[in-house]
Length: 581
Ligand code: ADP
Image (tube, rainbow, N blue to C red; front, side, top):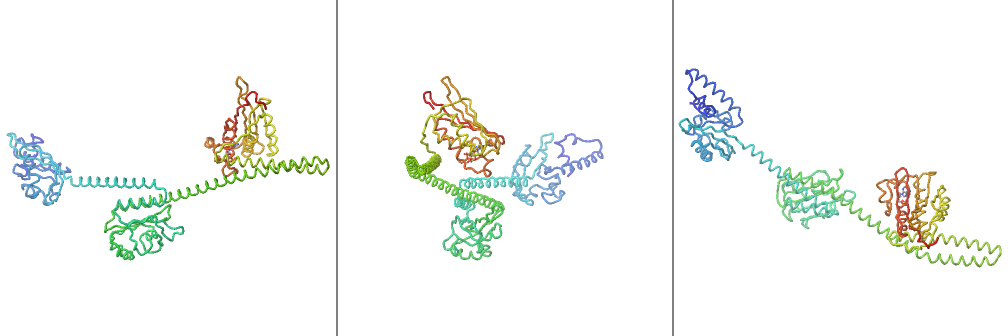
């Protein structure tokens, strides 16, 4: 019987095989051979292969069926399908069987309940076996059990969904954290988002005090006021979940209220106030050191999946970083505000003090001048000594007045106010030669002066322009090695009407200015990276110089190569014709 079936099953594949052969013995041998080969091939296939006859009886089953039904295949052959798979399974696949037996090739995917093999998801194809006269003798069934594959796909889909969900949650927390400016805001984001995400009814974010002995809570939500300890200032050593998390430097997950009370008996009191369930506490670790903890309580018992535990650990890590960042940010903002207030105070003081000093000095100067004149009139050695002494007082008062003027200017420049210039005609060439001589004496450095014209007239506030020159020469001296060249050059640009611009340049062969600093070098308080911490300075000289030059209608520029030297160029309009020096 089985052999016939095998033959029948093979017919659609090769009609030749079914042809009558010469001699019974040869035919039988060929059958045996054929059947063995067929079994060998179908057994090697990953799926199930069967031949089912017109009466819905199995006639051939490959080895995969043995695993499916857990019986030897000899016990399947000749049995009705319903017998093997039970009524429920049979009801599911019956319509397909009938269609195949009506001569139709059928493919389907369905869920089927097999009596002995349980619920299965199968992908099947039935190929009808049609005789030469058109009668359907049966069909070949090719079945794939896709239960595992689908289960796997489902698991993968769920895992992908979980990953996406987790990424979205982390993303929303990160976005909220990046907008949080100070530690309380960070704590608010964490408590609110995690409570909403996991359904916690209690949430706390607490940071450790300086000495690490106490928690100071930044946000505390849902705790009944009747809780025995004051949760806003809790000793780390006291029994609490967050305390234990910090002491052990490990996350604690307690899935039931019973376990919570057992591990942390003090919760018994809290329980009396309001029912509670699972709980978790995680230490906040920044750069290997605990800085606080987060804790959450749930209204009922609940398990914490591996994913949730991971997510909470990641959130605790983010929270620690955000807290530290916002703490530094807040401290920095406070320090900056203090510095700004101090500068403001100093500038106001400078402005008032220098203004107040101006009047008495003018009086001293006037009195000294008057006394000197009187003494000279005595025409005696004593009168001369007095006159000389008065001249010294007057010169000192002049110097003081200049210094006070500078202080006043400085305070005005700092607050960005314009100076009241006292413009007078000036021969730049003669003036610079004069000033350079004083600089040589002050700094003990050789300073070369050259000019492409014997004189060049400008309108200038001598006191302020001197300040510019002294600052540029002072920097050239300060930022170049002793003995290296410093040169001042004066030149002019001409238009058809005569000289239009006066150029004053100060060149040194010093340390130069790094390219990155060059665009900022005239900004107030900016000091180049190659000078900060090495050469004393304030970074206000050049910004003041620029303001003074610009108020003269001119410009100031710099060219410099780090390590080779710098040249500062002041460009000022020449005096109109008729304005004489
Ligand atoms: P200070 O010299 O007090 O720092 P300045 O405003 O005069 O302030 O100068 C600002 C910065 O410009 C200096 O700190 C220095 O870095 C750079 N600088 C100015 N002049 C020179 C120079 N001649 N050579 C090199 N660097 C200079």
